[in-house]
Image (tube, helix red, strand yellow):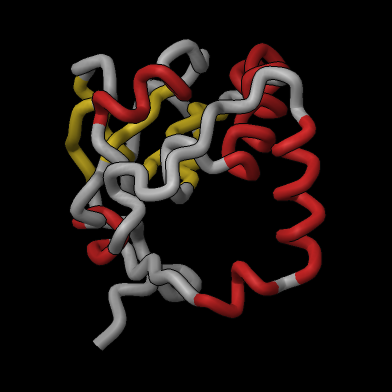
Length: 141
């Protein structure tokens, strides 16, 4: 049985901590919308390229009533050097409990898509890219 949400289904409430130790709740009744992203590893060049774009537009996103929240399947201490300065909430989930709870799965096909490779190269060419480890924590599962 899949935990994947179906159209019209209510998002199951989430209460957890960010990588900075702050409590976070979803849904968050202080804002109209929460945009929850599930990402891969702390040092993922694609993820960091995309998240830098979200960070650059953070004021615009917040003024639209959207709270940005990003989950990674890496440990907090590994995420802090890469995502610690982002102006939105980042959640570490090294055991992928949240991923399973919300029906998020991985697929080899997703990594083989040509558009992914373009994003990888763009991320690798970024001046402030994270150093990529061969086997970062949370990346072996």
